[in-house]
Amino acid sequence: MTAGEKYVAAAYLVVFAAVLLYVVLIALKVGRLERELAALAELARNRAEEPRG
Amino acid sequence: LSTSLRNNGAAYVSLAAAALLIAGFALAFFWAPEDADQGISQKIFYVHVPVALTAYVCFGWAAWKAFKLLWKGEERADLESYTAVHMGVIFGLLTLVTGSIWAKVSWGVWWTWDERQLVLFLILFLFYSAYFMLRYSTDPGPRRARTSAVYALFGVVLLPVSFLAIRLAEQLLHPAPIFNRDGPQMTASMFISFCVCLAGMLALAGGLYLIELGGKRADRSLRELRELLA
Image (cartoon, rainbow over all chains, first blue to last red; front, side, top):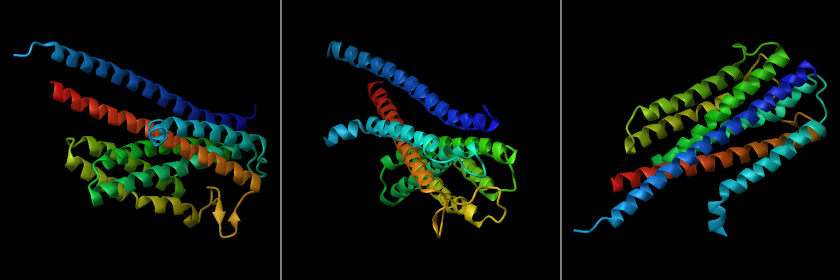
């Protein structure tokens, strides 16, 4: 592999790595949203089960 | 069909991006000829220039949304403008990194302060990076939305300056523009490969923009719900 080829590979890999990193970050965000939504659903269920005075 | 398209828009656009980028890079490496002067290193052009143009489009889109917020008072435009700046900064950073790699292999240096095109793009990138500091230095609400919109709109002035710098520059380390009065300055196969790569990169930015926007909207809705249930 020539030096030029290595630099070309590096440029394309940087973009690929950035997209991959973005996918990981989005996956983490979706996980957090899922947990928050579950907690809110639990809270809403508890409120609904509370005896009405 | 329209509801399905709206709900799955990000998935369709991302799929299109993947197909176009694979096709574009394949064309660039296996169909487009090697540049006579630069050799294999010229292949960086097919990723660097589309990424740079995509960054310009993202900043332009952010300014357009900011304009809509200021002119028509569309509240949702605030989040859209913010997300577009977010995307623009990501693509701007990629432009600087891929550009540096190309500079190293072509000119022997990672960066040169003598090239107006590079310095102007860096200024543009830093200007929009500062947008986040401004945005998070004020409390959420209409005031923050307006100040952020004014800032995003100001930044659009830098776009034509940065874009045209390559044409106005007298010192020519940076490669010549893709277009001039005589049309594209490359062979037809190179130009077609470049166009496919550009379409792919724009679709990628569009897909990421829609995903990010959906996430930010969901985040905001959850916050409102939490406040209602508290």
